[in-house]
Length: 547
Ligand SMILES: Cc1cc2nc3c(=O)[nH]c(=O)nc-3n(C[C@H](O)[C@H](O)[C@H](O)COP(=O)(O)OP(=O)(O)OC[C@H]3O[C@@H](n4cnc5c(N)ncnc54)[C@H](O)[C@@H]3O)c2cc1C
Image 1: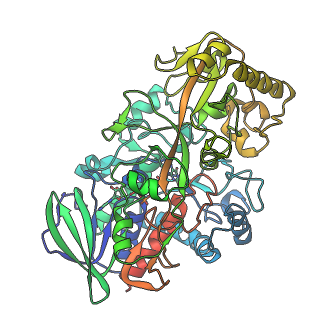
Image 2: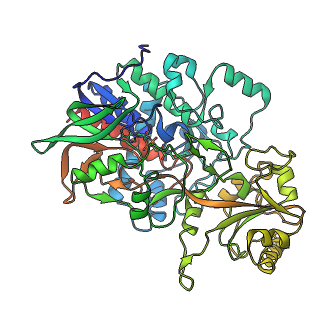
Image 3: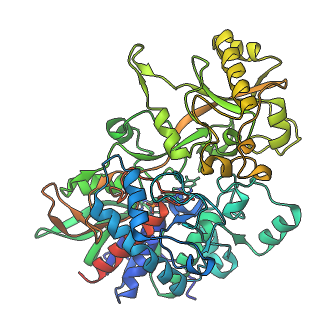
């Protein structure tokens, strides 16, 4: 493997130029090389991998090639019905069909072309499994497995690494129903062999494949503008280590620069509601969106993002900024609820994170204020002891930054919530728990809720319903966050960028969160963003190479 780390020579020319090195960019680059194109990938950050590298790395792939061996039934019709049931009429059926029809082939090709070895995450239900075509027993969410970064030589240090999840597989994480912690022996083994999983397990084999195929990879290489000549995108201006460089793209430029979640102006302009806590890499500032707009692209899905509730732990940083921690396990295991500033519950806390995000955008017409922000996770002493909290293992003392009180009343007073109302909410919740039925929001009714709760009681309603009655009582503020925005230039079923009249902009392609998501608002299950991103990344890479 050619493992030298290089920067692009000035005025370089390639058949295909890819901007951004997350899943969209890496898969597009791999597909373009497969068609015989010379390819360069330019990455703005000092490290490769984007938000993909620090993600769970799971891909949602309906009708995939691993289902047959496990006797899992699936069909094109079910997958399309299911996506349509989640789209609120906003998804273009042709794009959904292109995704479903390309899914199996794309992941078979990745298995065959790279060192990726996907497996089905056992029993991981779709996120709305009771909807038409949904799968309560899983079968559509794929884990990329563990990959030894020792294989990458010096490039291993050039890939983003999550301090928390680098050595975990999805089933070890709270996102995948685990605790987020490894036993000492497993941890030591994986560290010694630099075995990385989740998003790192996904991007590692892709990067290895690109290096092997002679693809040029540059970090600290920020694309600043497209070069357009005679009505065609023919290259790109890239600032490489601060030096402006013109790079020619003989066949096409692929935008794969991620979302605009870290650009406050674009967030304020486009997103449908408050989003103050982005969880991905801070270099995702909408550069590709702005370049596409300047080139005359039509836009789609602009108000949407892949939503997620987050917690910000004081002093906990990632990439030099406040880290946004996803809140998964803490809100789905027994003994916790979410309340708003009025001290009232407002949703099924065990819903999937993307759907839960919608509750933060609910406007109260009387107050003309967002009804459910601010929001707090409330839990009790039993919950803290049994499940730990935000990195604290079960049984260990709960961290000082978490607000606490000896009674629900006192906790409410500390938070500035009406104490009587919070007491009433907790009593009502405890009544639902005793009767085994959350009459207000149906928590625990879905197979997804039960899977996401306490793994020891998985598939039972007790996995998520539990009383809040043991002092001390705790509270943590929960924020409206995102895994990445999902609106941008419209693309066609080959990943070609369309202009405001719906015509192809010659030489311009897009893949990943930079583009209008092919599934629009629909987040099918674990991997609901990466599945479509990889399918459309491949399409864009092939189409650009064959242009
Ligand atoms: C903690 C976490 C967990 C997640 N888990 C999952 C999961 O398990 N499954 C799932 O489906 N989704 C998951 N997501 C969402 C998923 O990570 C993203 O949707 C996906 O990675 C986006 O891929 P992308 O290629 O579009 O962008 P990214 O992976 O973000 O890559 C974009 C890259 O473009 C670069 N870039 C930006 N501007 C420029 C420029 N001007 N020039 C050159 N480069 C530029 C950025 O630096 C970045 O490296 C998760 C996200 C987070 C934060």
